[in-house]
Length: 270
Length: 246
Image 1 (tube, rainbow over the protein chains, first blue to last red):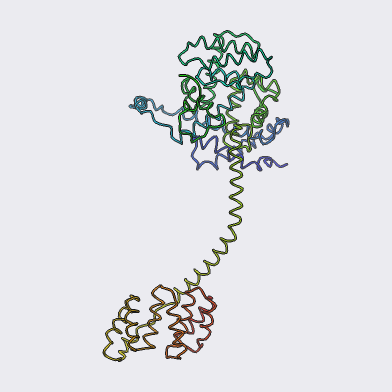
Image 2 (cartoon, each protein chain N blue to C red; image 1 turned 180 degrees about the horizontal axis):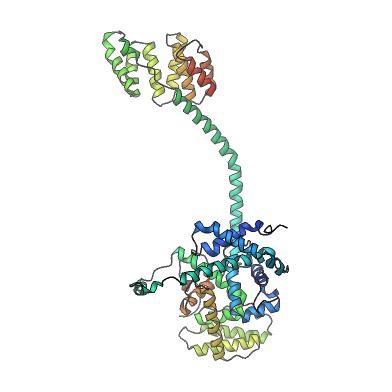
């Protein structure tokens, strides 16, 4: 096969990925898309031998090539960011530091359809992150739900493999957590969760260890959601809000939903 | 399998395919455990799969948000129904367009070839009975100004009093053709002039053909165009040209 012939049938894929990674994110203007596609193709040709030799056939070639194209795009993006960092910092301009003051003054507003689309995008990303945690994701969802004051469902916990008496105990703990008021001491909540996981995982974890565990994971979630280079600015508080949306999304999340998440949360006493 | 103790590009591809098909549990243990330990690799997995799966570069991705599937299914049914309706409507729309196009063509030809016959009455100062000459000249005045409705009104008065007869009827026919109304009056007038073999019969053939053309009846128009003798110096060139276009 002639040099480059392997990549030409995937020209459409290259164009799509260049658009997604470099243009739609605002790193390059749309006028430069053709030039960027050429740059990616050039990089692919230079690395053709390595690309073909590294491929072992475990994944589909298209997926493998997509990963390589994204990585090339990321290289181009990182190079651009490094170049920009060499330029004069905006901080030296007078008045820019006052911007944060003005942002604070912007009043709270209701969620618009456009905002909902962005939230929906991040809800999907959060779902993707949960999937990467595999079996641990269930435990994470239970903890995050309990901390956010979202009603736990017995279906959240895998009770099928438990003996009947253990299953009954776990269900009772879930009900007690649901009955807890939002202002209840956190320590009590951690103790309940610790007892629940002792039953479901047959593993002892102190309430303090559980608290640290969940905080560590929340920070990881926020780091991944914010991205590198950062394209979002989630904090602990805004992450909790996003998680509420995520829980509401179970079979009924709509990007054009008008009510705030608190309205679709049922049963929890406030 | 791992390069520099991190996921290789093919490992990343395997992760993306597992997320796409919702079978993360069936991934090799070393890939799963590495992502659980390595924040950088988890970030890479999420970043790559966000681009490929969430932004719809790879299709389909049923593993993600299964709640979306029923909506997509409903959309598919709706799209299929819409496609069937469009397919059924297409031939009808085509026929409708063809008919309209031919009508539009006839109308265009009418506008191209129609021009009101010049006012010969005022120019030649033909003498009529003096009691109603006022209506005749008023009518011709309005005719020259392009105010055809008023012209027809005055022509009708003249005709009811027997003034001018063929000449006034001829101008009335032209005025009604030019007024933008239906061609019925014009067709009746010109047919009667042709039947009477008046001095305007040859001109009436021409305007009758144009009246049929305006009505979208090019076949009838052709019949009358062919009746105009080729020897007619004024009309033969126009007739020939219009017959070619028809």
